Length: 176
Image (cartoon, rainbow, N blue to C red; front, side):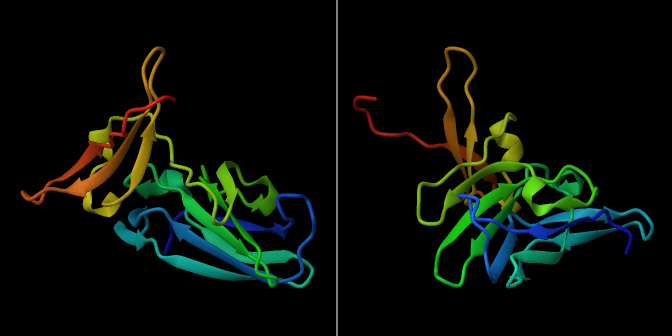
């Protein structure tokens, strides 16, 4: 196989900057996709969850991921969950641009949160209809409004005609 891959390694610290001692790293692609292998001229499916051990010294190695820029359909990201031995955990949203090896602390973040807190939606500056497919069914997206326009939140659903569409979510009235 000759597909682009980025290698990620380094030492993990908590969002507060404290070193960790052991644990597990779970990496999941936001929705399945394909990546083209130019040598074999075939597309390979990517997706699922990968698990990586965090060493007793906080180190992680062997994390090899396909850059999001190479995955079809566009707009994917990785949800990376850090699980510590004491039960604490947090997650980050990664979007990898190219196959340059990178230290784990230098991965560009779309966002991060302690697990169990509010949901952070991926923001897309594209037409909502371009996000609708079987691969993105059930996904939520935030499309930012322009000057003087509200942001809109969409969910991808399949209609009775078996066509996938992005539907805007409506929220009840009330004071802001």
